[in-house]
Length: 186
View 1 (cartoon, rainbow, N blue to C red):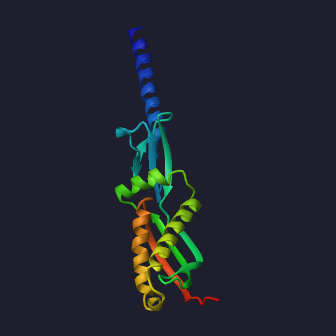
View 2: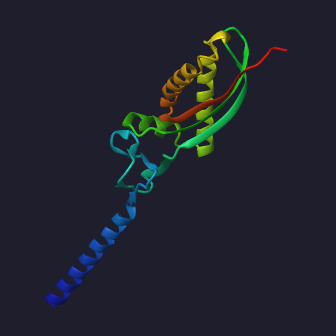
View 3: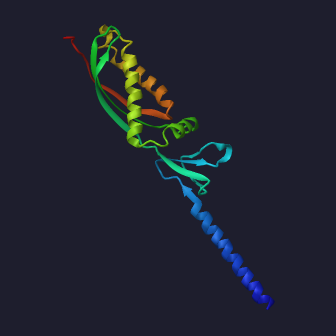
């Protein structure tokens, strides 16, 4: 009788350990390629846990799991409402792409600002930031220097856009300023 109760106890204990292992295995979540995994809720230090590779245990009701897409968002827009430092109208086309920066501080900023946004909204925000930077940099160049200052405009606009996109946890991947034309005032 003593061996039967010991056998039952060992079987129950093995079943419990197996059930516990299965339960833990279901809570382990891996970070997919091209994504950033963000865990919020009851986390160490109260800050989001951000992983760009590997995995972590996520406990339901205590923690929530989200993913940020690291693939670049592209944007393109023709701007006809630009003007130089002396008020001459200019039109140009902005084409480019931006992506989430993978540096730790940038990932923290991206988790705070982009977590609930769709890729289309992220692209629209990036476009607004870049267009504002191009407008600002172009407004500092007199029309007489516009034809020779396109490279400088591109470099200064890209640097300014990277500074602004850093607030969102993003960085500029590419930027192209095309169809640059000084328009005549009618």
